[in-house]
Image (cartoon, rainbow, N blue to C red; front, side, top):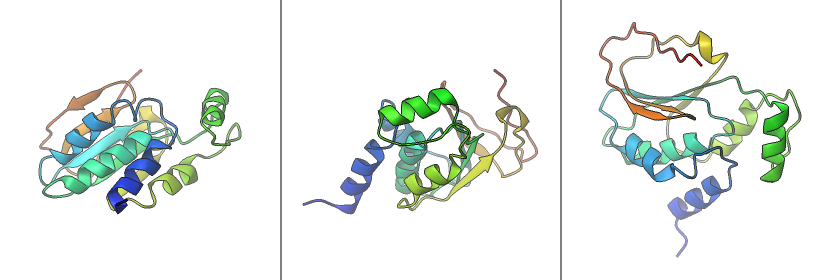
Length: 153
C-alpha cells in the first residue's frame, strides 16, 4: 500500500539536490531530535531538497520546530545547468523562491523562507537548536534571542 508519507518521500527524492538526498536521513534525524521551543535554521536551500528532509524530520519531533531558510533564491548559470540535468527548467537570474515553495507545498512543517544575502543574515526568531548548511551541519544550542547568526565564506 502506498501511504501519504511514502508519496512525500518519493516526491522529495525528485527535487534536484546539492546534497540533501545524500544526507537526507541525517537531516531528518537532526530535525526529529530538535529541542522543544527552538528553531531549525538552514543556510542555502537551492531548490529545497534538504529543506524537505528537515521538514519530514520536524514532523516527527515531539514539538514540531519552525524551520527558517535563508537563501538568495537566485538562479546562477551553473545552477540553471544543474537543474536542467535533473529535469527542472530555470532561467539565469530567475527567482527560485517560488520553485522552492512548490517543492515544499505538500509538507506540514512550518517553514519560513527568508530571501537575501547570506552575509546579511540577522536573527530574532528565538532559540536555535540546529543549523544546516550546504557545506556542513552543526548542532547548536543558543539561549539568547538577540544573538545573530552569521556565516562568512
